[in-house]
Length: 217
Length: 215
Image 1 (cartoon, one colour):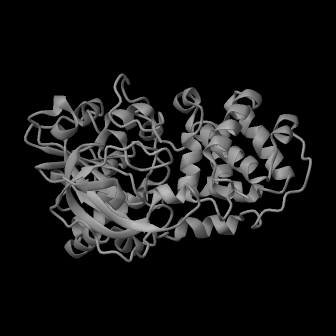
Image 2 (cartoon, chains in turn brown, cyan):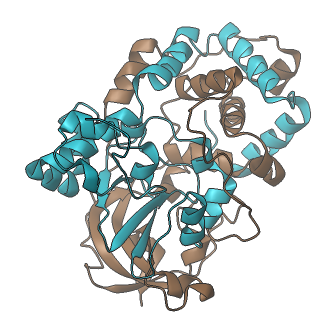
Image 3 (cartoon, chains in turn brown, red):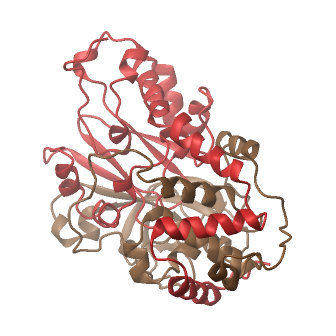
């Protein structure tokens, strides 16, 4: 979606804030919000449905509200959407019905297991890869309405395939609750192809792109 | 049932904006108390997540991996081929590191990692990301003005050094393998690990040094 979340290359931003600061949390509420966003889930929520729900935060809130606050709000929105919670309950702070989640609430043991279990997003794809390492490709100049991981700043720009990773779950489908894969590539773009001011520089930007995001250049 | 309907979510967000407390601490508190009351969240699970990422998992893990790559050529080769399998030799593979790629700095190349679309980061290896990594400023500028961003972090690069910016658009995650400090040639793995900073593994620091430190 053409949301404000697609920040790569946007101009007018100032210095990076808080460069000297590395602690994961600064305020107590941040720890709680992080814990909530991590401990609340539903099996059918794909990673890209959750990302999409964050992208749909009203633009001013997206740019100004703190990071963990945004994720706590996203969890609330997802729970309301799925029927586990109502806005009236949140307004009144009172539980009005007993929800029946598809799975019981996450446990401390599940948290420990989650952080120790690498999750694979690889997916079988029946078709042969359309591109090979060394191929020149162009990111499609498209504006898909739904969630996508094709950043705006590479659309219409050409790069070189530098890696093929086999099939990976397609985020655009995941955001619709569908789980199927496409070939995934790393495409290397010359900075000078992306930004006029980078003319003459040898710098490059590497972007992972699914097969439907690109066409032969 | 989840709707997967963006219009519905957008509507809910506008309602939440209008009716939830604006102050983040109050908003979080309101949400947590209700979720606990409704049995949708186990407070012990919330505590567990906080403790894991506050006390247990952090950039020291990545530093151990980097130090081993500096001292064990076989490990370094494995790390560059299959990052996930290599960090699993330490038991570090896990949250958001199912597809890890290490990218190596050299005298001619400097790597920098960003997630322009959200905040992707190799959590089980580096812990939670610093706030600046998630900032709008870093996300917007790292791909367009990497040398300007690096200069703000105190990294000055010669023109003949190629900057490679890795935008984490897929579930693949990146670890920058910094160059070994020249002044710590005879240090052992454990001592070397203490010289590796989190920023050097994201790419906002380049020249690590043993200056003023003892093995």
